[in-house]
Image (tube, rainbow, N blue to C red; front, side, top):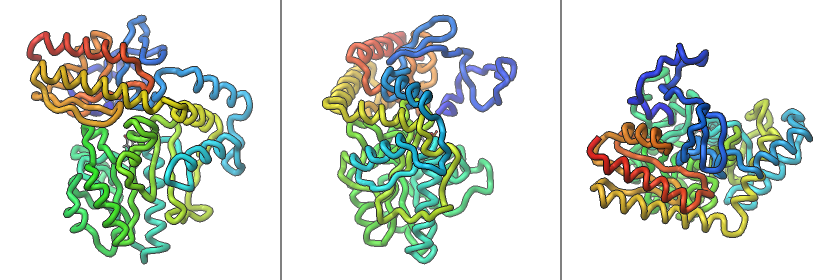
Length: 401
Ligand SMILES: *Cc1c(COP(=O)(O)O)cnc(C)c1O
């Protein structure tokens, strides 16, 4: 998130633009993108290993998505959510056919999908569990920026923001099954977590923890909710991250990559968990056919033979390259799966490295001051990975920052 760059040089944004000042940004205006490459208003070119925060899964302005959007825009932009549309129906079928869930609700962003997951869990608690409503979430977890999803998140700097928060969230440390067991009461209806914590610095939930959560939630008659907004849609080398461990959630949310850059997200649920009644959930743009057309194009690309194998292969190339850099420059561990990777730094100088990289035409992110994060396009090439590693090597070789 942009708010991880709190040490970036101060720009008086009130002078720079009429936008509300919500984060410090460099005075760079991006005007064009193609695949892994992004161009600013001065024609400077950047190799983009952030891709809109893991959003542009097929790189910048991929032709299949641009064509799908244009085709659908000329055909039908919005029939209103009071009617079915063929694009939303088709995308829902594709998601159901390729996941453990049977029902889909489309949303406009990850936070809204998670807000829907929270509502669905509370509804399920009122129907099946005598009004249980509490949801156990993880310390350092990130679920979005609506009031309920900020309340569900475990980001320490948010603790005192926008009080009073939405009640009903109990936080426990990631990978601590005993803490989850201790936190369960008659009021508890679900456990919600990211299979790999993204904003926290790419911290994986262990397979043991996920299996343990599945067992525990079954025993106690609770729901298991996976926020796959960042890990889903091929990012970790399988279509959904839960497929790595085989632990199936009852409810899953998707965002980011699902729209390849346009506002699209989804709330998926198993039939048993799906208890919304008419009037419980909705929205003006939800299931919009132009966004759904983009989602269909994304699904077709991700499901094409060899695509996910290539993600895993490139993930391995990047991982090995980062490991070599880490050895050479005496840095920390490399974490993550597929093309969601992080490199630990011995010092909290991630933001300096991010800035030096940007000057040299490479866009990366410091998810934490001591963690560099890499989320290139899923169709990134081996050559582009080599270029990224070369630039990083130059920066790290330039001596202590
Ligand atoms: C980005 C993110 C969100 C929020 O998605 P928005 O589209 O920004 O609302 C929620 N959960 C996770 C795990 C994310 O990475």
